[in-house]
Image (cartoon, rainbow, N blue to C red; front, side, top):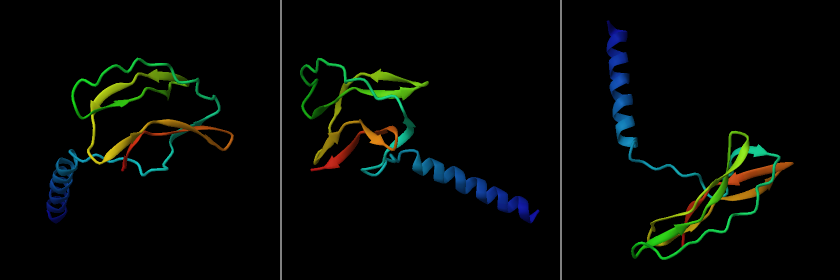
Length: 110
């Protein structure tokens, strides 16, 4: 009976922790290169028509080549709300060993 009580406490603690963390955004530290190392260099970025921001405070998140299903797949750019005091460092492919690895986009304090 004692172990069942401990299991219930553990289960409730896990559920509460998950609920508290569900609003948390975890971003990799700058310099983190995520994803697999691929041997196929990404194509040149596509030319995108940026246009005018839909509202004040919006920033352009440029498109990038993602590695999905064994191939580079274009993810188009979009407008979204900015973050005061920060600028967006876009996704970038960097040389890593004998291949390429993507450095995810992230916010950088000004």
